[in-house]
Image (cartoon, rainbow, N blue to C red):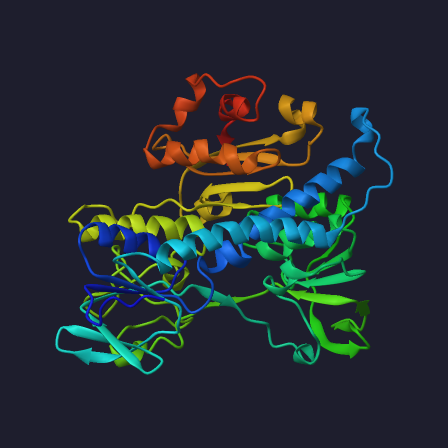
Length: 460
């Protein structure tokens, strides 16, 4: 920890994807900058989110490929997974990245990087007061990048058992015999599949009528069918009455009286922004009813000179949106004209195979009153998917027929997380959807079918 000054030009609270990168840009412009991070460098993504989960996903993919190799003429007997070794691999990769970045900032000659909980405690003239421990530092500009955290739902008896969240699950050294996942959204589905491939019996419980409820229902149902075909017990429309401790395990009592005995419970339902212990009220920073800090299109809060980036501003709980927040804000502070107003939402569900999504769903486009044409295509009819033997999934294009613009797309299946980005770029540059009709793609790939799928557009 190196605190080079007590008076700064900018103080960053939070060391996730946006804060340190922004600090580096401001430092390069000659500003005196401090970064405060309570926990390990990198926030959720680096430590227990995107990257470590994908490292374990790779191990799970290898196990699944070995078990299902016979149709390819490859015969592998006695496939087992050493979860401890998979976790060690994950820790080695993530640890190297985290240690390298931590060392860079802790030993930076001009950026002050402090591992401590920091809070706003008021204002002195044009400067905001930031307190950590028994020390106070000041700056006229504050960047808030504290992220978000998991919060368990109010289920009777849940706090009496040693339940897991997506942080603690990543450090298990062996697969539970039966893992019950509470929550059928992105985290629950991804990690449920990983641990099923590691050898656990997995039951996913979702309160809604469909998993990942923000997606079109047929897309959600296709993903649920893929997971069920793989052996996961995916249940929707489920209510949980209570949880009971049972020796070293637990019993989940459902609303219909069924008792599910399990070894461990993963709670993957609900996250809230880390805005509740920042001292926001002392400086007049407003939040919405869910606790997200309200910002304008340049991430300025209701307090002059205080900006909020990343998960805490409610503009997209993704690493890539957080990172782009820092790019937009850095541009704004340098006098540029970038804003968040034109950002097109895009993300992926990293099941295997994955779902790539951009823009509006078909249901959202209908609700918005857009005159849409829609084309659907089964992944089983895509040559590359058939050759690779990975055929679950579907592709959907949603086009504004009046404007000749793609307004949304979903690609569930082989390489969906990569192919969707070609469509995201098409939308980002505001190119006509009809450009797909004359585009020359490479054969054999998943993307090569986009012109064919475009040609299948029909009024919805």
